[in-house]
Image (cartoon, rainbow, N blue to C red; front, side):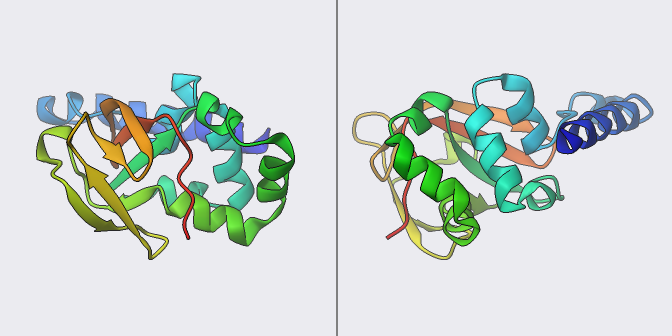
Amino acid sequence: MKIFKYLAVLGLAATMAACASSKESEMAPKQDIVGVAVSAGSFNTLVAAVQQAGLVSTLTSNGPFTVFAPTDEAFAKIPKDKLDALLADKAALTDVLTYHVIAGKVMAADVSAGVVKTLEGSDITITTDNGVMVNNAKVIKTDVMASNGVIHVIDTVLMPN
């Protein structure tokens, strides 16, 4: 619960800062990646995992980051015992979560097929033949803007090798 209060304060601070700034920055997103994920309501498992792994400070920092964010439905595809084990293993959880993040802000219009290095250190493969795929995950929503990057919503949790 403490983290949700922190996120609420962070969101309020971001809103106040945006209100006091120039017209150009008023058009910029007011919430960071974690705040956007919390507000969306469809990333509850992802947010809980980010908190469990201690990655909130990373994903609220300046970035920019591109996050391939699995929905709650994507996490529900993982058998409960395996998901519980992953959530209990901070090192493995950190690896899985940072495997969903790349440095820089990559908008959908700029995506091209190829191999990209993740913050975890391994590569992901992006294909564009039948819609955009990241490894075996389909991108189901693009360009969800945050103050420190962009989120692309995916339908499957990515697992590093």
